[in-house]
Image (tube, rainbow, N blue to C red; front, side, top):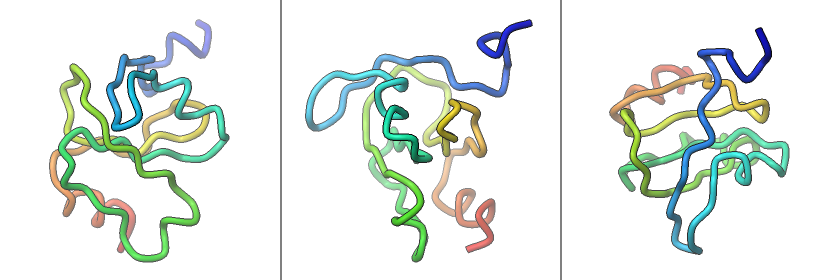
Length: 90
């Protein structure tokens, strides 16, 4: 099994952001964790902005938001901002 077959990795979804179309792989090129917000409602808890890039986008996905590691593994996937704060211990 290759790393691409890992079910914990987020697929390279097509995204539409305020700056235009992109893909998940493009967001991860900077080597930072990404909080992908598909609702426009999720905020990073205080103190996390230096560690995580917040990207608001539209996509055909079965989740509202996901915290994605630079290797595309999903650290958190949820439906509400409270879910994220609970997951981060904020």
